[in-house]
Amino acid sequence: MNKTVFLNRTTPPHIATLVVIAGLSALNMNLILPSLPGIATYYQADYALVQLAVSGYLAVTALLQLIIGPLSDRYGRRPVMVASLAVFLIATALTPFAPNIEVFLAIRMLQAAVVSGMVLSRAIVRDIVGPDQAASMIGYVTMGMTLAPMIGPALGGIMEELFGWQSVFALLFLFGLVAFFLLLTDLGETNRNRSPSMLKQFGAYPELIRSRRFWGYSLTATFASGSFFSFLGGGPFVATRILGMEPSELGLYFVFLALGYMAGNFLSGRFASRLGINRMMVTGCIIATLGMALSLALFLVGLWHPLSFFAPMLLVGLGNGITLPSANAGIVSVRPHLAGSASGLGGAMMIGGGAGLSALSGAILSAETGPYPLIIVMLISSIFSVFATLYVIRVEAGLADDARIEGA
Image (tube, rainbow, N blue to C red):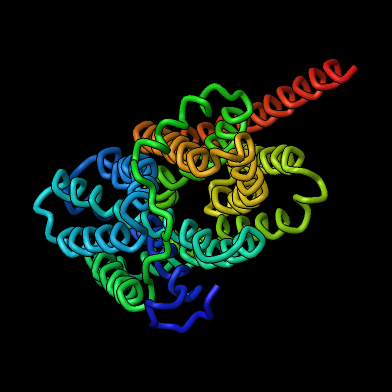
């Protein structure tokens, strides 16, 4: 690999460029969360409809993950990234001027183009370094991305409270300009082996779909992250309309989830190779389930306080941080020669499932129901993640038994 020179497109991109581009995708999801109730009030729309800014956005993101990878394999990383960020900037500039909630949501869906930063930053790493260095470099990019869930809701809540929800999109536009500048000046083309056809990757999907282990790992990731996506969909409503919190308070309390996730990632890095991915997944899923059971118990005994809702989110974040790296490793290891296709399909399933759960959470909540529908959906999703992991373990045990029988 050539030596990296910052802001020089003839050398490999600087790690900071990849962190900013990937982090913008995460920030775009988290920054607006405290503003959802305010947007509902502004447009005089039902919260369940406004919540499509999260669940609908996730659904579009899932679909784009299936397309962006093959597009970049065929036409190169740089042109796909430039086009995607240009669409994001135009959509972000137009969002505050949407005349009604329908137009607002349509423009919000266009913002999903920014997911290319998250998808292609990993592909770029694989382009420029070998497999040993890639794991470390992707780890740094992922760590940078975790800052967005930590600062995004808090920053968005403060902006919404001081200047209104439109200011959140103005801030996103400024962050987008910074990312676009770095993209144009620091990121050259890294894909030196372009695919002759976009259809090649899609042709691998049937083989993956027939794999029971792929389904087990994918469902583990889907249900484990489902509790988090449900929280994104219904958490702002519970916090502001049921617990009476201000948007800035909501943003600060989101830190519980982010801190838990960072701690889980750290533990995963320390112990996954020693304990194995299946044990890590079981442990993480059980921790997240206990977190939601604790939240339900606290409300049932009458402790209606923000900490009863948000403090257990620390355990949900911790559980996800332990589970998801191992589940994702399992997804791409089922068929090593199809790792790219598996990553795209597994990611689409995870985000698509999260979109469904997020929409469900937003639809069934009301001031009369209290927080219980959201907590129960999150608890059930966590329980299902445990069963999905146990399914993987059972399938692998069966494969091991078959191998022993054939060897005997």
